[in-house]
Image (cartoon, rainbow, N blue to C red; front, side, top):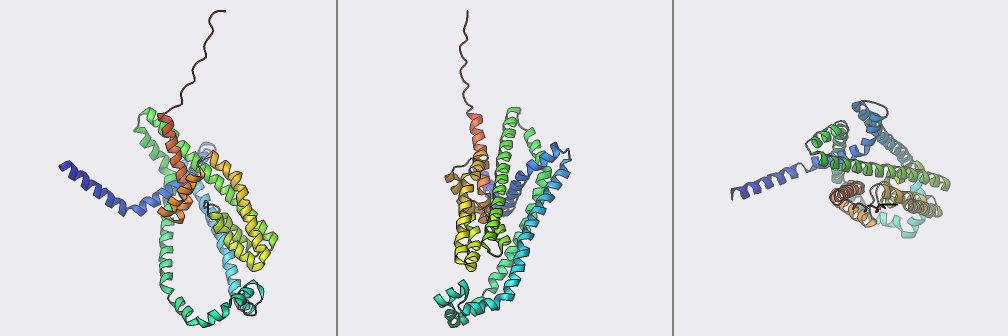
Length: 346
């Protein structure tokens, strides 16, 4: 009875601590994911360039941070400039819309949007005033996101620096056969996750470049921001390309109706071709998941962590697949082929 009561109390304490540290655990797992992706680069600098691990980790970490910051700057700067231009030209857009000029003006006239706005102006003003509280929530959420981002960045660097030593210490407590199995599984896991993310990054760059040239050829404005957005959303499996093409299509239809349809066809066509060629090769050589497993992992990731879970779902599912595959291989090794009979005599 005392053992049952003690086990129950211990379970309650563990569950309570897990609930309290849920956010910390999630941030640590995300940092471990990024450290796993960057680990091969650090090892390359240590083994080939003969750098000290601390210096190699610092260089890779700074290069990754600079890359993310550069992409953010390249996305935000032209977007801010275009918003400023749009604000300055907004009166002209309103006048053109009221006069029925352009695509927006045609829609305004066709659906009588101007009359609707005039009739419901008090309700619209009230809705704008009531939007103050949601804006405060958005600001709070943004602050929490920045805090989480800073925590993940620091933890990623520390894992790059101390992770191998910690793993080596843990493996030293295992028996030699088990240690070899664990080492093989870890190598396969890192190779699968890092290889998949590297391939997806290449696909994202190709999608962004192809979209930019398509937008440029069609004369669609804001092509730099739209191409960056398409390239970024391509990192999100299954639904990312649709999220990416929507803003480009909207701007394309505002520019001209043929341009809107053209950019949809070009971007989705590129996605289908890439998914059947490069994407198929990346999946086969790294995580090796079936389409059904990909879909289920994406849905599970969205349910657990939202948008971030969708981004991490496939690499996580691939890592689980690698671990299960290796464990199955260790327990059920392939049978050795029988030896061929040797002729005796002559």
